[in-house]
Image (cartoon, rainbow, N blue to C red; front, side):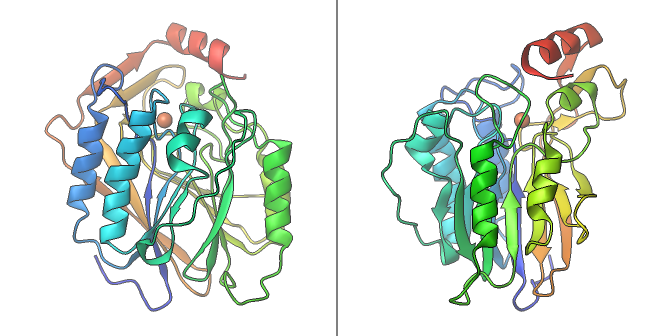
Amino acid sequence: MQPAPQGTLRILHLSDTHLAGDGALHHGTVDTTAALEALLASLEDLTDVGLVVVSGDCSDDGSVASYETLRDRVGDWARSHGAALVVVPGNHDDREGFRAVLGNGHLLGEGGAPLMRTLEHLPPSVPVTGISVVAGRRIITLDTSVPGAGWGELSDLALERLRAWLATSDDDGDGDLGTVVVLHHPPLPAPTRLHEALRLQNPQALESALRDSDVRLVLAGHYHHQFTGSLAGVPERVPVLVAPGVANDTVVTGPYDEEHGVIGTGALVVDLATDGSVWSTPVRVQRPDDGDEAFSHSAEVVARIAEEFGRS
Ligand SMILES: [Fe+2]
């Protein structure tokens, strides 16, 4: 891939790794640790990455071991490539397990240097949020998960923190090239009924917070399908990039009421230039069972999951 132009922040954007602490297969079909390792190995020669982002559903079982796998595998890649590392929880994550291993999710700073961890015990009702500065950009992570639910929401607390951070002027010159917001549930319509039932419930609250801010880019996951949009309520038209899943791909061309997944692993390489322009390059790793069925849910099963974990 071409070198990143001077001053450009290159981000390796991963999402939905769905790692299992005991090595259990995702949906009984996907070895997600092997998928992650294959993806990272295929990206060994990628240059100029300043930041690695994992935008949620890091774990499939919420176990400490699954978060350790993420920390070790992705952390090693980021460190050896001189990149910062930021991770945010998704609906499959467990805040206690996440915090026990990953703290507030801001693991590595500029150049891959470990960040100081604050030892604070927060109850699971408190969303995991954080901020750090990488290559002159503020990176804000927001937890859109709702314990016990599949749908997402920006809580009052998360929104309060977002507004406070965005309102903070940058006196020391750090972070003056704008802000990147990372969350799991995209503030965009979903391609299937199941994901629509599991979508972010209050995208307008995000739009309102981002209006007149210095946010240049929103990164999300959740749909297991590469997806691009912008926030209509923000005059600056902040781009929203949704990464494909590491664990599997969603089939978006089937019947809307059904949900089908196939084996497939990808990520985005996102470049954020100093003038705020953004471009992204999808990357895939070829796996031996690429395209094989990962799972298949009938309309009845989708309706049941949507009833239990979603919102209509
Ligand atoms: Fe997911």
